Length: 413
Image (cartoon, rainbow, N blue to C red):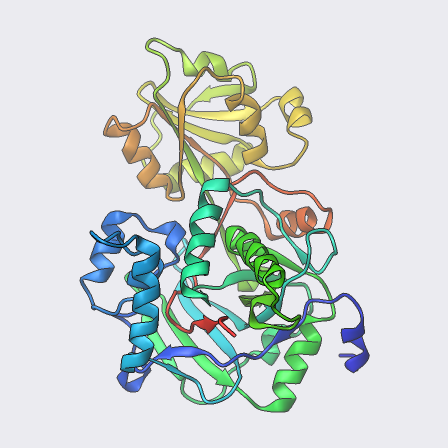
């Protein structure tokens, strides 16, 4: 695994940190954890908040109050929960093995096991942390204000390590220190790891190769911006703001489930023929008699090497033309679709990671069309990151999602 000299190189350093965790009886966090902020809406947030006055969603996605904005609300809760003992600091720095047990879309049992640690931030382009997807400015502004207010990593980025053997090093022993079962039936379990030999072995293995960001690009860019702010304000190198909480998982098919993020098109001009416009970029085939559900269409798309379309006119396969593939520049449905969408008149584009939900929006008249994509593969994600390129925003959806609230990281020092 290499000796200490590996840290003299520009390598991704993953270090233990003293976690801030819920002081819950038996480590049961079912009513306290929440999905990351970017996959929940207002209704989800309200439902989660109704489960406990201390649910993590009240930190990460709070509402404004009459005399203070949502950022001040989150900061007051963060400090108040720690002062009252709702949240407690672990007695010593640790890495945290985090395992998610779930069933995939075919009903097969699977597990994703990785390690939570403090991943040293590195400037874009230095090769330590490789992003694979573009981001949008609005989300970054919101997260930066939240980070300034709370001075804490509330949820981790998700990074992929190509270092073989990481999964084996993350094999936990004994009962977990915290556990939760979410609304989808996924089991989340967390173990503190403080044994020096294990901490050192994991750190050296992660440092042996650049890591690729799977999820949390906004959080990564915001963490970099905040680090630069703190340094400009006089913070010494090596302060907690120089790292970000990261969930590092081995880059292996058996550890990962990647789903596509679909596109909903609405507010097109009256009478505009979307299907005719798309024929300039795709070979369009009608799917008469196809059962109106996501799995049936996904199977047809995979077999034909095509995207899918559901509109009031029916269900169609969209097989990209040679010219569209060449213009897209990447073997990704999101890139191909961007070529066609750029030529449409003014419209509204929204994103939905569930095919069934996307098609239901069309049936309910909430969208003109659902454009369904095939998932990017693990190999495509790795190749994009290593090549220095980035996928269009909202290309990949890693499932299940690590829960906010399993452990937090204080960066106020």
